[in-house]
Length: 323
Image 1 (tube, rainbow, N blue to C red):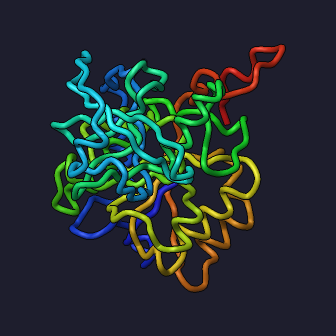
Image 2: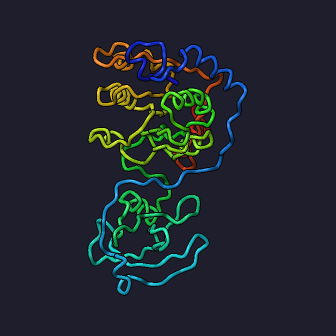
Image 3: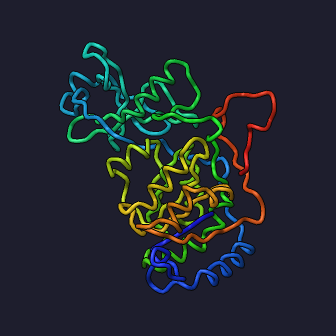
């Protein structure tokens, strides 16, 4: 892990504001704590479908129950009402039946389900209309076509599809705890932003450590950064894709003036710190210099790709990776 914060921008020996201990003391206490604590196992738990941009559609209005309501069905999850609606991008004559949970207002596909077997949420009701999640609609149509592999609203490299293990987050827990103390926040109120989405395990891993306010959604983070549409956050934590120029783009973003002096923690291979783009973005940055510290694990982390996220190969090498 490489990390930096407000104090680093001023070349101070402390972390952030509020009198956090010297980094050598923090690292020492961190190592002692990490050696005695074992992370809670949350294997097999997966996050819910991410929310993304929505598109309002007046077909399926609560005010049109007589015209759009089909029937109510009893499922193991809730009582759902069938409605007819026109999906985003479809012709007005192309009517689709969706299922609406009258109690929660959530809207589901009438036929497709997630990998966990749950109904696929494709929108929600608001102000008498259905707001469709355009990414979820694309996912639904992909599943309807028989394509059961993962899909993303941006270009990906199969070798980047690996989830960060729980141990990696446990190794920086004392740093996050110190940040909470410095900012006067609880674990549950500390806002964490991870822009790179794989399969969402970061949410469950950090939740198991007490950090429940985590933003990690299936969206093009570069497009989001371009429009400054990122969420409000207190600390930036991510394990970026190692292919192409992703790390270069990441370093440019987190060391830009618009990013400011918010603390960041990046999980990357050790060769990155010698790259020109890393040095030029941090210690040699003439405008917004920062001086990262490093946390090195005792053993290599093993990253395991989610099922069906990589093309089958003859060997087993693709089943896991370690930088």
